[in-house]
Image (cartoon, rainbow, N blue to C red):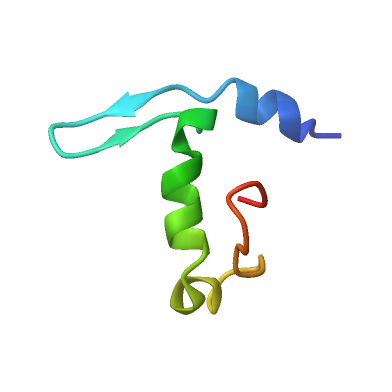
Length: 56
C-alpha cells in the first residue's frame, strides 16, 4: 500500500527561471489564507472557503 506521507516528504524542490516549486511552510500561511478566503477560488476546489488564518 502507498504511504502518502512518505511520498510527499520525498518531493524535490524544482526551480526554473520563472517558477519555483517547494514544500509549503508555516511562513506561507498568510498567502494561503489570502487565496483560500476568496469565494471565487474555493468555488472550484474541494475545501471550504477559509474563514480564519488559523483555519488556513
